[in-house]
Image 1 (cartoon, one colour):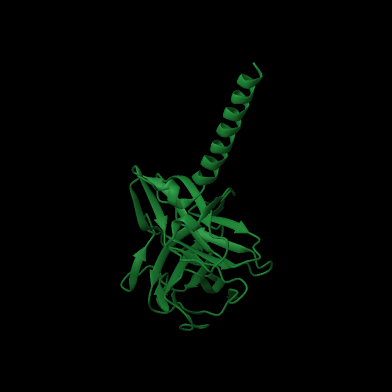
Image 2 (spheres, rainbow, N blue to C red):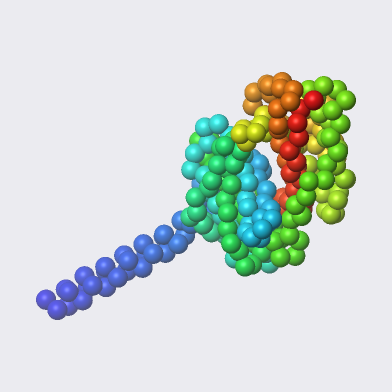
Length: 243
């Protein structure tokens, strides 16, 4: 009888340990995508340091129908950014950004890391390109330095300093109304964008035709200067009145 109790106890301990191992394995990105259809570079995402707290703000674009949005990170930045076994899931809630058009994760981090955002869409796991946080070595610069030319009524033309703090790969521009609703979201390689002229736009997350600007109303211009490793070097925030 004692021997039987001993066997049962050992068996239960074994099951407990195996369950713990399975739970730990499930939170790695490599295990999550194992034997699943997935696409790398299919989530638009980047990160910046907060202007006041230096928290890491990770922004992403959730396509319509996206489910099971996840946040993964490495222990530090001294790893192979494409080794998905080094990424573990962090269970934090995202917040709406531009009233939910984009999403945002906020973290108070000590170490710089690699970050990946995933979601599921059309029975496939979509994976962002790795994001290198640089809140210590290259904190994001926040400014309102942009030239707005409103010679063409209702179509303001925005120009900003090119590669202002170095390491630029692409620019992301958002025009929003005074209630923070996103009207247009575009990417350019050039340091210029005109609302709403897409001749130099290389990527567009605007899902509907942007409305005409109402003369005399206030609007917001937001610019993110994004590096090759998806860190936001420079943010421009400017409120303007449509003319």
